[in-house]
Image (tube, rainbow, N blue to C red; front, top):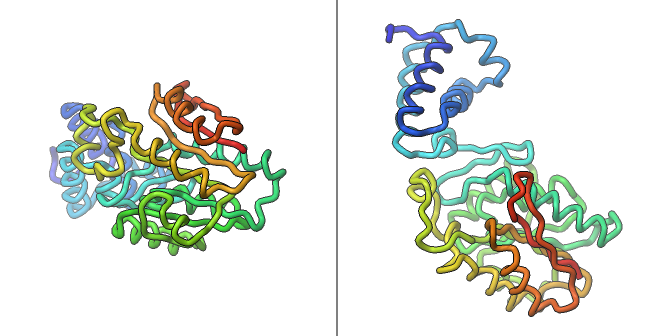
Length: 286
């Protein structure tokens, strides 16, 4: 390529280069927008403008890193979730669009159960990671009291940083699943979690398996370990009237429903499919 590259030339090169490596050809645009701090419309308006040598060198390096398997979000240091920008790193799971549907489903159940009044209710996001779920809940429903737990101190640091940057007042607790609430005698109106649910041994893209924390991905031999653990403690932490929602893997709905039915024989337990028609969420309403 010529010594000086226009934005258009840089994007064309990145698209072809990433296709060769089996990566998403649109990743180049995401990387360049983040590097230049530009909106998509601003970038497209400047396609014929030249990139500086420094910008080209940085862009080429980033594209090659992604081609080798590094997630785009780890290169840019951020991911969009529910219209907000969250800082991410190798200590936390990268927020996925499917998890936005978990929040929508949860808030819908909460509206019905508590007739639209969220004041004085206590909600907890278990295994918070980047804090995406907890922070989104607090910012969407400021009247909620929101807790967030994680077993990883590094993950909690990331979540705290995101909460501070986005202005979300959340109580962060270090601990294993629901144990921090058992220890403190706290009863909750709402529990939400996107636990590890991938069965051990399942083949994942190296972009995922090589860069995201395995503790946030794998849920035992059949992927169900964390639902079993939740089912044992959840009845002692939820109030009499409460809502819980969990993200699940496709095809796990019936089994997860069965696991929770033992602890909640009188609750309404529902499997909800995502926008792509895949089983994605299990809700418990009592």
